[in-house]
Length: 354
Image 1 (cartoon, one colour):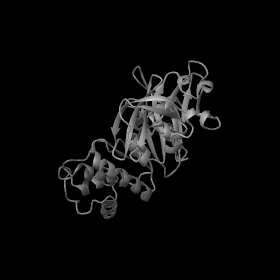
Image 2: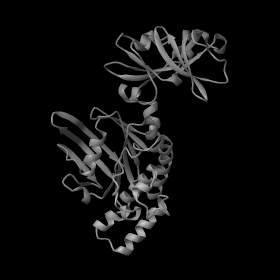
Image 3: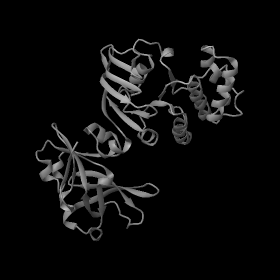
Image 4: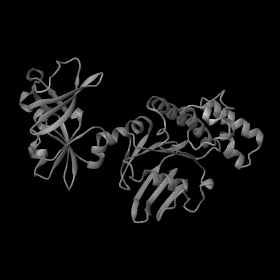
């Protein structure tokens, strides 16, 4: 295990920022720390970097405990969301800075900087200053500077937060390719689901200082461990009484069972579009939102407003129209357990414990 964290705990005064967090990361993985603002993501990252000290718990790199080591002795590179470039230095000198501090020979510094200039697509910009660069170019310089000393671990704190949407999209793909080429273990903090899903090998969902779930983007989306993960990843609608949904009455049981319905769990249409009409229930179209390649439909079913997608190839629905609604599956949970249920009215019942 390249990085291992055991029972990490951190307070800032009376605020309990990180609560008994444990995880392991294999060498070469790109991990996304994802969660709402104030959930503890950056605190975990800063403790890994040595910029904050844990109240308790252990941090190990390659099996060696690093709790007492200064940041410069941990073999890490750190990329801040604000770039943190030296304004009075050229691109070349910004990238070379860490190597100069380590007193690396000048010939090797030049060689290493030019390698990174080529790798990060900055060739021809070596003599420019930060104010002469775009936001995306400045962030590339920050990446190159972090990689210059050849760290064993790269830490990135919301690296694309200060960049506009179009450039941010381009840099996501670029970062993924860069990390694969360099082969460095990397952890990045983000609150952007799309960013984490697109870039990360695995995602760790952090909420209120706790690690809710760790896994591949697909596994987390498909089989969330907790109600928070189910509601946080993707689009979901919460139904307070799962028993109100047709086909789920028996599985839902008591009134304390709730349901989360994702748009893809739901199908809406006219009567002639369903082969199993008995599995559907009546609904009313509330709103339609054009999304370019499809419609986002809000439909009221039994007092609950659910959302789903509808192909442009199908008959266009209208607000106020009476329709039929089929809930294919639901994520059910109560105080004791969580489970995914397929609607038994459209086939055999499938209940999966999570």
